Image 1 (cartoon, helix red, strand yellow):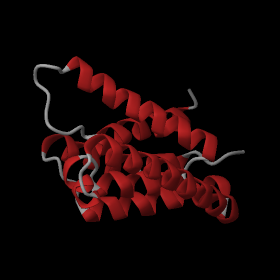
Image 2 (cartoon, rainbow, N blue to C red):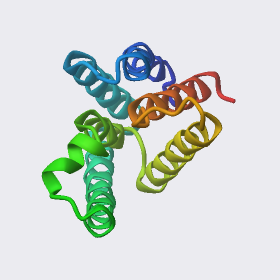
Image 3 (cartoon, rainbow, N blue to C red):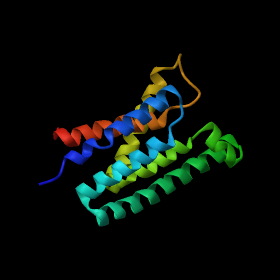
Image 4 (cartoon, one colour):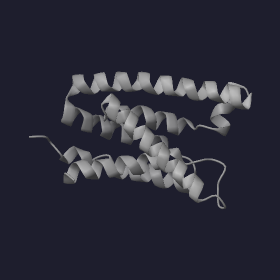
Length: 157
């Protein structure tokens, strides 16, 4: 029988990350670390240490490839130096959360998670055309999708 209670562990720190990202556009290091620890506990309790480590390694490689494509597109499209990429486009909190979520998902599910959270963020960007901010709170949207996934797994829906 699969253990389900660990899925509730990351809900609180992830919800605080989402709130911080939506309201302040910054995320705290403490909450990122706490989220990473709680996701590691979930991965260990559900899959075991070996499977979790293998998934994390594969997902880190996938995130690196994805990040490489994003940087390549940024260099061609914007013709700006790479150091401005983290100022104008992508936050370090986005990268860190993208990596620590890799502890929880198998590679195919990780790609689905990233796709769904980015599509949700894009939908938000399109619907709020008049009230648009400069940047998209990607950590917030990844957190919302992750909370939904955790609750879905816990309640068995």
